Amino acid sequence: MKKRGGTNLTEKIKVVITGAAGKMGREMTKGLLKSPKTEVVGAVDLVQVGTDIGVLNGFPPVGVTISKDLAGVLDRTRPQVLVDFTVASAALENAKQAVLRGVCPVIGTTGLAGGDLEELHILCEERGIGAVVAPNFSLGAVLMMHFARQAARYFPHVEIIEIHHEQKLDAPSGTALKTAELMAEVRAELESTFAKDTRPDHGQGKKEEKIKGVRGGEYQGFPIHSLRLPGAIAHQEVIFGGQGQLLTIRHDTTSREAFLPGLLLAIEKVLKLRGVVYGLDKLLEL
Image (cartoon, one colour):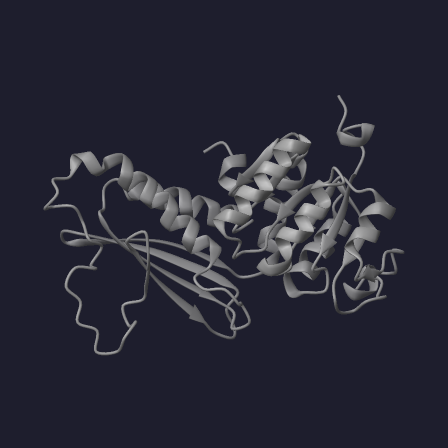
């Protein structure tokens, strides 16, 4: 059985990583360098240009230095997968450059709009290759979202609290949005079972906010509260309320190492896909 590019499945998967000098990019580069399944053949960022990625991550030099020129790196190294941990404004263009060269994108950058995903999906379909866009690569976070979707069948009232480090640019997090989307799917499936006057309003009926926004934002009817604090990495609680009881589903990321197993899974699976798969849950047997 062959992978794209004609290499044997027992060989390492060639990867280029963008955003390689960022906090997430460095942690994932470190893991990919240590993994027996991957070979990092290129690294791209706007900072630390010329720095060897081995040295940047506390290893001996590996002969791969950070470049600003993604197109040049892709053309020179001919990878199978592009891993992107940049920002939303750059991720789509990076992915398009990869797809046009037959390289499968795996995107961990959050904040991409639905139109961006549709554009990428169409391009991938045209080129016959796959892409994975995952708001969260932590397997524990994926299970948290899965359990929240199940609980939404039985608890109409729910709110989301997500906490991230103070340097995270987007709010709410991609994980919180994905969680709300999954629960909204359940709500749509069950909507016919609720009489119009008894459907839950998720606490969003009559509100008297003495401070505007104190009840949080709202996505598809679900309140989301975003906290940005130093000392945090990525944390989320989904709190359900019912008669005489509360159910809390919580996930805490204590180290960015938590994202590596999910990233490696996506890198392996994306080579067999066609079109965009949104969410790591789609790659798991849940």
